[in-house]
Length: 563
Image (tube, rainbow, N blue to C red):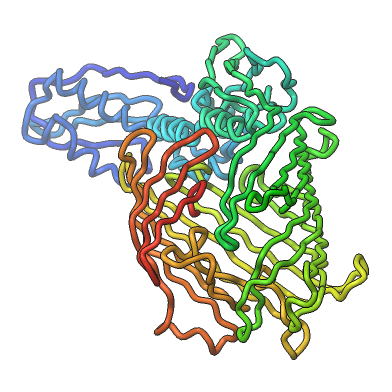
């Protein structure tokens, strides 16, 4: 127990135990509550002084915390005595000085103290403040933080804090990955205040980087002399360079596609990723290329600057509907494009700003197949602000996320066909709340507006506007016949319950609508779907099966949670 360093004397002079107490007085204090303290004493008016009770009374007054000394004496008063407790008050605090703190500001610490400048020093209140401050640090994960000393320097109360330090981080099992690739992503840095919550978050983030098949919880070892903690992680690296092949179903065109996918980690430098994917049409005897894409990702530019960089190049042949409500047939088109995305963290792992540059050229594979649509391009710049406080991105139990994106399309001269001039604004958000260790409820909301710059609307393919229906948003409806519009509103609600460690049951309700003007939002004809589903854990994420009743009873299969 840490106490303020004050010279303290507790003693009693010669006391008259033979006469009755006529009066009890407390002198030497300016406290307005002195009469309340007298009523709490063991010795009472009308009784004789009892030695055991007298010691209790002296201890009681001293332990109030306001007094340096407490002295008991008696004086004759007629045929009785006056029992007087003379006290020496602690000094008035002129200033509170906090030192050694980095995590919490001095003003924040002082505002949380019951001890204030301008008041009489109370060492009991100071000790209570010390205990409360320690509990505050521990709640935030700073379990080594403590008040190392409190002392009275003149009339100033000095509170000295030691917040504890993070020592070194050691890695056992690293073969290809260099430690700096991992340590730059961590909040726990050598010399920073030790925080157990940050270490748990660091482990979760390291797992999400995708480099490891397994990471142990940190093994901690405290150094009492330096008041620092060293952490050791036992890791098992993945075989990150791989080639996968398999079959996919294109539900829009009812095609079975073969795909070949390759990943090359640390392609040009530590931590970057180069991947490519090729899709082939299997419905014909000849292997027709359906699509290919190449993706390159760097979480830190040049492994030095905390700016992420992603770029994609793609070519795809696919069947899409147009935005023309009078012609809903599928038309085969060709999309050739690329983009570049730069991400700038504002608050590490929580708030991020990204900007995206996109160029895509669209043309008909058979120009005679449709007369109402011409070749065009999309040349756009986007600003994206995103936030996340999810405890687990793959299967969240608590927290929320939101993303606001503003996209501006214009003719920047990158292609030789007309580029769409438009503004697109969208908001995507979700919140999760755990009801029990096995159950969680989630609510998802999406809304968006697509606005062409010209008065007359031009015909585009459905991906340039909003589409609704199917496993990715509004369950109980077919992807082959989506609802299309320049505006969209969607709400998804799910109740998730863990049946076993690897299987999760879900009850869900989806409602949404697309429309073309503000006057088109009529809630009477809003679309809705509801049903039940199962989620199965797998190395590539949850496998999702949903049985939904909407426009029809439909079984949906997909990868990953809906939101």
